[in-house]
Image 1 (tube, rainbow, N blue to C red):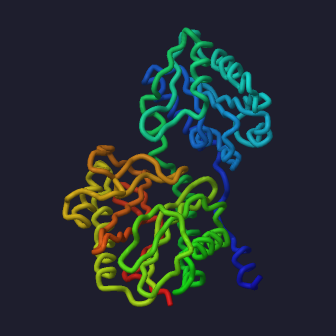
Image 2: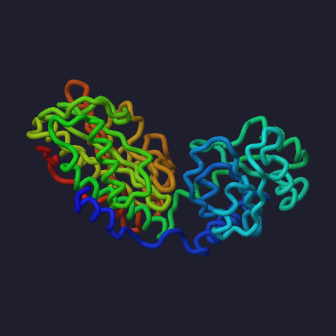
Image 3: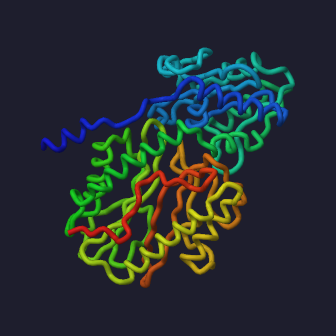
Length: 398
């Protein structure tokens, strides 16, 4: 390995890991205030981001679908973790003190009776129990077990969380914003080094592997998402895995990364061109930069997600509506994509502290696409860019 490689690995990355206990206490208190307003006695959670939001429990073990995990949040007091015993040691390092475990997997009772007894401990017999529901939510437990849980608590009413989790997670704390910004800075350093791994004649899959390596060298914890494309007048789509096709002279190359730092994502792309760009590429790039600027001007507190969509769509389609991608950006945080969606029908009101991606795309002659994405946090005075500034002209690869 080269001396430069080891120097990259030794780079100091970042601010402190994790959060102060006060961060989690504030989240719990805000959730409980909303629960009281909605007449809810408890909420219970089954997914990684929901459980981590209230506990700080960060592990890659969620990649395994074999075991269910639960967290019960009563209307008052601290959350209760109901988790497989394999996770107890790590959960004990969080601020959670009531940790109830069972040996999992258990084909007869995989935590179900323990979850039911925990809810009984914290809720009145006829309590209202909420589960996150609606767009971009799911229940991470067997549906048959959920039905058994309801049968074990016959006097309880299971209901929607009335959008409480969505509203809480949409607005980030300064500590969360700092982690997203750090992730953006890591990706920015990796993008600056793309000429090291992307040259004319190099296979696209080798470029993708090389870029993931750059992200890790620059400080990413992991790189769960990497997409992109290439072609002489844009690319076919922005989600396909890379193949062995060679990067040809004149090709546009796009890399879009969602790397993770301390549990928080960045999500932005950068475009390059192998050699001299076609005039159509250069013109499309200028329009994309113009569209992002229009989106920034619209992304003010009190405006809506739809307002931001229309501002960008006016530039990229003349107001005809977006194409196959379906939206022109989204929320960002503990997950690669979060609420809201920048679409014509999303009337979510923007608030200071929301983190958004602005992601306009343009169709080029011949059916190709050119897409540009950057990350911003909404402030009272307007958006603040979290991702590094993009080049005013397409960076060239020799």
